[in-house]
Amino acid sequence: QVQLVESGGGLVQAGGSLRLSCAASGRTFSSWLMGWFRQAPGKEREFVAAITGISGRTDYADFVKGRFTISRDGARNTVYLQMNSLKFEDTAVYYCAAATLGGSVSYSADYDYWGQGTQVTVSS
Figure 1 (cartoon, rainbow, N blue to C red):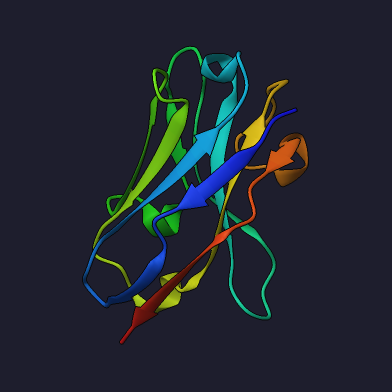
Figure 2 (cartoon, rainbow, N blue to C red):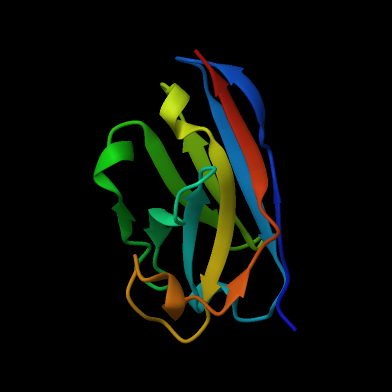
């Protein structure tokens, strides 16, 4: 059974930074595609960033490029999302997801495990 537990959300002023963490259970974590998605009130869930398992290739949504960085630590079975220069419109619940069988980095249906989400609120 795979479990994903996010942490690190909170309230921050515009221009500030937060680092989200996602701790994963599972012996083959290093091979999983890992992603971060977010959902703002009244909006659909959207792709934020992803990192592949073997090559560690990263992909980002255009609206976070240059501000957010995704990384992973295989020894800790953890994936991170460093968020800098936060904007009011980044306010959302952020979800960590794992695609244990691979798939398209931005296609949420390819991710078969999801965390419970962590709230990020950016004050203007």
